[in-house]
Structures are given as structure tokens and as C-alpha cells.
Length: 403
Image (cartoon, rainbow, N blue to C red; front, side, top):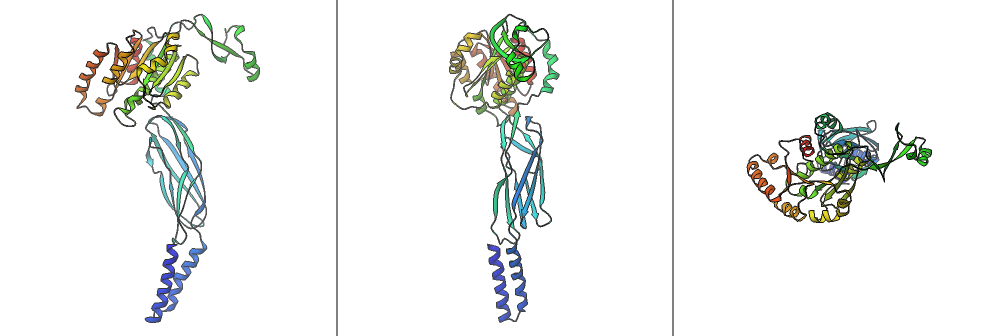
């Protein structure tokens, strides 16, 4: 009500001036009229907000266009609209804050901007924040949250298009990643899928067929399929780099791309996230890719956990599948000591994710020398991944060649 006090004071000042100095008293009418007009109109209110997002699922580094429409129901004054975006995003163009002056005849506004996701994960854009001020500051300021909440899923960098372009380059490195897909069928259920010409009559799932109207069959695991379990060290996201440039983010990208490749070749793929205790049981089903992807998107360092503890929790699966193990970590002295405790295994491969050279070229030679010394202490097969030199697909090619 500061505005009302001001106009009342101005009115009284004109009255006093007219009595003492003979200033025309009619001038006091103007602040009085402004006060009355200000009292008749409230601060802007009754907001309606609609937010349109170009896509609800995208990849790291791909822009998302956002359009916000605001409608004002009543009042005259200044309106500030703010979109509170998650920290893992930045605005690449436009602005997530806008200022508008509203009055009868101008009740609709638009705010548009582009978001650039910097880190994978599942994020929410909360309701739109609006602050409104009366044009004469007579009525109190108004604040509120309007509209709805939108969820955005950000996937690791590597996209399907890029994967397809790289597929042929990997085809020449088949090695022994997966054995024949036509091995002897076991009794272990895999999934329900649509019928394909040549499927045995006995595997038709009549209940599912009747329920969906499509001819569906039961598919079972086959003997002879290779099994690979990826151990992703989520703790390495805390060690070096920024929120978007750290070993964990690169490790997630590698685990995702490698899983796609292995599943495409018919291998059973499992995943364990160290520092989170998350285990994804090995499978080769078509839907397993989404299961792994969801686990990778949500991966983060949540609790203290060593390699020894992770392998003990996975002991049953390790005995059952006798898998090839790929450890994705940042090799530092503490990690070396942990891995040495789980013992040597010819089926274990370690991928060392190093971002040091990308962060600073000056320390790169010294870091590489220290890394070599750590590899010798490990006494295991190690594939160094300097992210400033090699792409994800190049490292997958090396892993395929070793496995």
C-alpha cells in the first residue's frame, strides 16, 4: 500500500500549499483521482499458463524448444514470468525470464526459449513462477506458481542414428562375443513376442494371443549364448571433472553403447552399478535394452561400496552365468587395491576412463606415466580410454577385439 500512502500525502501537500502559498487547490484533485482509479483496478491476477515442450525425451547436447503462453484474467500492472529450469540444463537461446505490462486489451503473452541438456537423467520443469505488481503500487505484490510440471528424459550422448552409422565398422570385429543364436532351447523363459514364420507350433501362447488379437509365442533362452556383465563404478563421478565432464558420464555413455552392441549380437548382458548397489540381471530380450537404459539414466553415487562388496553381491549370478566381466572405472590407487582383492580372472577386462588430458593438457604426460604404473600393479587386462583422443565407438572396437 505504499502507492496509496504516496497519493494521500501528495493530496494533503497540495491542500496545505494552497492554504499557505495560494497554490490552486484544484491541483489536489489529480492525485485523488489517480488514487481512486488505482483502487478500482487490482494487481494482475487470475493467471492461466500453458507450456509446450518440443520433445519429452532427448539426448545430451540436443536442444529442446519451450514455449510458454500466459493469459491474465484481470488487473493492470507489470508481470514477471520465470521458468525455473534444472541445473543440468542451460538456455541456448531466448530467455527463461520475461517482463510484460498488462492492461484491458493486452491479456496474452508468450515466452520462448531453447534448453540444452548437459547431463543424462530424468528431470522436471516445475510450475511457472509469476510475480505481478500493481501499476501504481497501491495493491500488494502477488506471487504464485501456475501451469503444470513437465518431465524430460535425457539419454546418454550416443544416439541411434550415430550407432547405425558405426555398426558396419564393428561388424568386422565379431570375435567370439556371441555364439550361435540357434543353440538348444532351454526351459528358462525369455519373453513373449510376435510369431515369426518357422516358429514351432508348441511355443504359441494362446492366452496372450486371445487377449491381444495377435499371434504371440513364448521365447526361451538358448544355450551357447555368451554372457557379459558390466560393472560401472558410479563413484568416479565424484573424483574429478565437472557435473557434465567427468568419468562417470563417459562411462555411462560407453556402457549404453556397448550394451546395444552386445544385445544386437544376441548376448546376455547384465549390469551392476557400484556405489548404488543396482543390479540388472543378464538377459538378451528385446526389452532388456530399455531396462539397462533406465538403470544407467538413474545411476549415481549413493552409498559406500567397494568392488569386493559388489562382486560378493553378484556371486550367485557370476556362478550361474560364468560371464565375461567388463569393469568401467577410473583407475586410481584406491581402485587398484580394491580390484586386487577380488583376485585375477582371465574373463575380466578393465576400461580405464580418463578425462585428465581433456581437462588440462599440461598434466597429461605425468598422469599417463602414473596410470601405466597402476596398470602394472593391477596385473589385469586394461584398455586405457583417454576421452580427448578416442571416441566411444573406437573404445567399443577395442573391447570387442579383446573379448
